[in-house]
Length: 186
Image 1 (cartoon, helix red, strand yellow):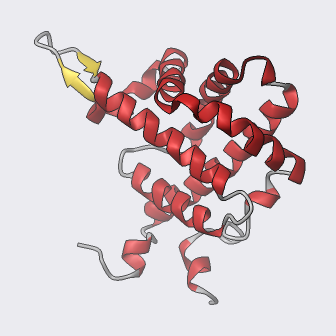
Image 2 (cartoon, rainbow, N blue to C red):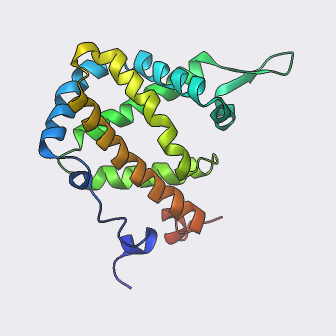
């Protein structure tokens, strides 16, 4: 039966690490471009989520906790809550960049984040919808420094992040989350 980690994830899932997704050159590109991206995390994050909702309007329903209800009954985004969430997402990207050389800790964090997002009905098949919005946010922030190589490096990082989030979502769906393994289920 093996180690505890293999019992929480699909076979082969835990072995995949950053180096399986990014080359050493791509790691360098992401690390060198992050300081520019991180200059204004709230603005970049809001740009990403605005683009996401423009391209995938149906995904708004997953973000009801970030919305307020008008007297008319219409839902509108609470700008403070949305900015807070967008900034948090960007900080997670910062953690990814900081942990590119040792992804074990970050992999576990992403798996837990995937488990948490499954409670909001986020499904692994929804994760690819976020990439075009992230790409647009990176392009907006990096300007002419957003080359094809930069885009590919960030895409590979997003592929890694998506893979680990999907592992966590699968764990939650199968009831094999960390809490369940530790006997903390209510």
